[in-house]
Amino acid sequence: MIPAEIMEQFKPGLVTSLSPLVRRITAPNASPMTGPGTNTYLIGHQEVAVIDPGMDDPEHIQTVAEACGGNLKWILVTHTHPDHSPGSQSLQALTGAPIYAHRVELQTVRDENFRCDYFLDEGDHIDCDEFTLTCLHTPGHALNHLCYFLEEEKLLLAGDMVMDGATVVIMPPDGGMTDYLTQIKRLKDMNIEALAPAHGRIMRPPKTILQEILDHRQVRENMVLDALKRINQPTTIPDIVEIVYQDVPKHLHKMAGNTVYAILLKLKDDNTVSGEEKEGIWTLIH
Ligand SMILES: [Zn+2]
Image (cartoon, rainbow, N blue to C red):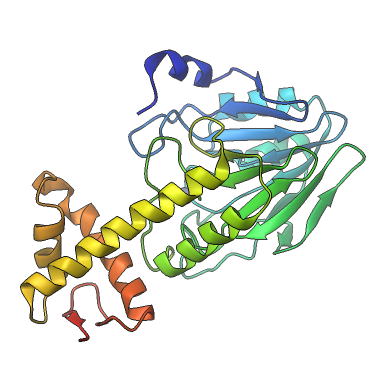
């Protein structure tokens, strides 16, 4: 949880300068799922890139457009979830700037009205005199998820790959645990000085934070494996949830079932379990 006095820094309408090149404006969508709200990041001054306009809130989009001072050149989206991309079109209408995103996987897109002018992919650069942003394709939370690495400050605009004070939701088929862990390991191996998440504060040191994520996921995976061993016969996700999440209130068990499903698909990739459907039967391979 983020302390109340820190929540003040995320008041909608506030333009917060975080570093020489980076400013943050938080959208008014604070909730248990989105923390203090979605962070819209502004990179640069003479020429500006906006990362994640957030949801389509007129006041928020107006604040972002004004803070760009007529210099907005790139509207960049980390992924097309409803709290990240829907404001793109309104920001474009106000500023005329083109929209960039990873090629949208149509079968999983969550923001159905999303349109972009240019596609970005792994290794692409957004370049100007002031800064370079390098694109990293980081599936795991969403198939079309991009992180943007600000070379001058070694700052990773991390979207929903990490969350301040919360665990990232991995919901198949848009999300995938095998991909997510692969990408977290890759980010851990990079020379990054800080992580700027879409929800919450700047996070550092990255290597420690990313290792903690790997450790936490490993603990959960081990719990699912232990439950499978205890049940000791082909079983269902609700039966696994019953054991792994016995301390968690019943009304959260459906959510937990999504996480267990993501873990089972990862264990299937590892050839440790067999199974197919979320509602189907899962078997530990001895
Ligand atoms: Zn998301």
